[in-house]
Structures are given as C-alpha cells and as structure tokens.
Image (tube, rainbow, N blue to C red; front, side):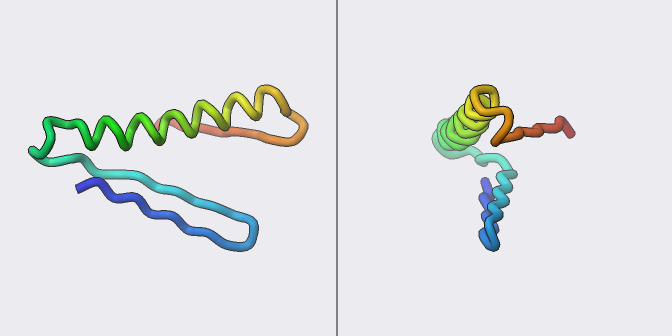
Length: 62
C-alpha cells in the first residue's frame, strides 16, 4: 500500500509519501507515484534556482 498524507494550514503544506505497491500492476503504480513526486521536487528546485531570494528547497536523504 502506498500512503500519501497531506497536511495543509496556515500558509504551510506538508506532503508525505511512503509504502510500496504489493504485487499489482508490476510496479507501475509505484513508479507513477514516484515519478509525480520527483517531478514536483525537480520543479521546486528549478524555481528555487531561478529565484533564490524567494524560494529555498532543502531535500535530505534518510
């Protein structure tokens, strides 16, 4: 099961994605969720690169 949790409020958005697809679709759903999540991060990094005075992106590996 892939779980996506989003918390919104007071000018803040937190999105957490975890889990893994089990058996169904040969990993296609998991790949799709990963692709969408990573595309969003790449887009945010590009905005931060273009506007470093307005946007900061901090991604950590755990």
